[in-house]
Amino acid sequence: MKIFSLGMDQLTINNIRQAGYTVVMQSTLPDPQLASGHMLIVTSGQTEFSELRELREKFPDTLILYFYMERGVRGYFGIHLTCEELGIHFLPPRSTSSAIIEKIRLVLMEDSDERSNVLGVLGSGPGIGCTSVAGLLAGRIAAAGKRVIMLGMNVYDPGYDRKTTISLDRIRPKLTGSRLYDEDFAQLIEQDGYRYLPGNRDYLSAQDYQESEMEYLLERASDNADIVIADLGSIPESAAWYTGMRKSALRLLVTHPKHEHRLEALMDLAGHMDLAPHDFKLVMNRSGQEETVSPKSLALRFGTEIFLDIPYYPMASGRLPLGKKELAQADEKVRALLAAFGLAPEIKKKGMFL
Image 1 (cartoon, rainbow, N blue to C red):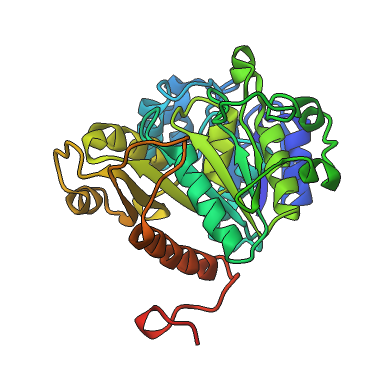
Image 2 (image 1 turned 30 degrees about the vertical axis):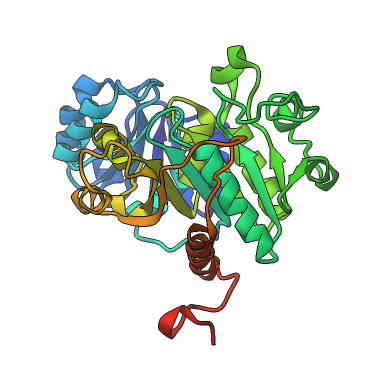
């Protein structure tokens, strides 16, 4: 199958070709007969949203991918809906070449050999406890004997109160120049048995990060750890959040029953990224405090499952002061998580390993 491309840059096209696909660059739309039975990728820079219906009518027998390139999470929901109605596949803003390749494989129903060891932790609102939950899991996974790197990928909050010599913004030049080395990861902060890179402290640069930089960071971290935990925070509009969401093999959504309306918006956004509710597990933080609905009811409503239910606690030093019972439950979940990543035997009867 050929892929006709209109409006994509040469670097992206080269990457698609390296993935094994035949790409034909176009300066104008191809002849419909030539494109019949093949794939056509067009960008919003070349084809306006108002022209999509006409495009579908002109290419009735062609797989069409529409790459909407205007950034911002609010602007493209209606456009995605129109694409669905017309049978056109949608590529959201911030889609990198690897994201486009993944989409092509999804459309063609091809299996990818890529296996991720990234665990993404995101939240339904600021202050919900993403960093605390990510740190808890990192510590328990490290206690199980695995090499863990926790990355602060929240570009709006470093997640670490003390001033440090290393953080996301401080290694930015290395990300831009693709010059991260193994020794750089050895310089990360060591705590509770894992290594930690605090997030961005330079708030004015929050929107300057590029998806390619975040992909490179995750790739190099993955080479230096058994498990990489990406603390993505609760604000979707950033390259780090988008890339972490897409690259994570498992996604834990830290929330509270009071955030029911926020969860609905996040799940809608996830749908535009080809993610379904079953791609998420819920972490109920501060459970039992002013609940409007039960955690179980919330999970059932959104079609997902509860990974961990953390009771309300008085915050102490940014960490979760869990008791023995809660820690035992967390360790049981960690064993299941490691099995899912292929780092431990699968759990058999009564939660025991054989």
